[in-house]
Length: 252
Image (cartoon, rainbow, N blue to C red; front, side, top):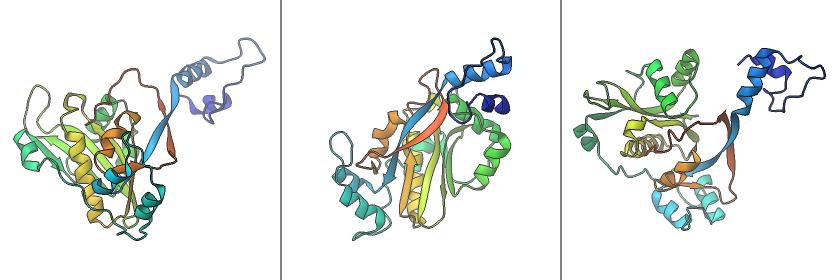
């Protein structure tokens, strides 16, 4: 998209493009901007906070909504409870994933930017500028990814099959981003395994507030892992292109 041309027509700022007073004055590049803008949308993403499975179970009603704001606030602010939530239980040990030829890696070593971008595209995330993505990884507090240890019909040897990362000040708060699992491996427990292990790392770092902005269709799965949402329904807003299909919905 030509950023300068789009800004002239109010697209970059989120305003609707104003029609020209002169017939035929809209340039071809601007028409393309308008066409792209028509396929983009504001997606509401619920903000979730990790409080531990035991407290999350107490706070949730049948529909997974946190109903006791006072108790939640007490947990998140340290109140009369411990400031750092309990670590999550690892439901499936590394040995079981290794038996499937899958390995959890908690360092940047071995991550290929091109391959990570390919994974993002497969699940419907926007492709990132390689240099900027490299800087983002350099400034990531914690990350985890899944590597294939064997060649198969659904994976190459060494292929990156899943990814998640967290940014943080290293003390008080952290936010989990970019949770993605290759479509061929979705609904295999890989997403769950990554979130459990990444959250465990953050808790062990002594971080008391761990949040994420979830894709709406997987909110219920995060809540089963000890995350809750605000009783007033606070929402984060993310601007992204509208997906043409339902890729990326089965992350867990």
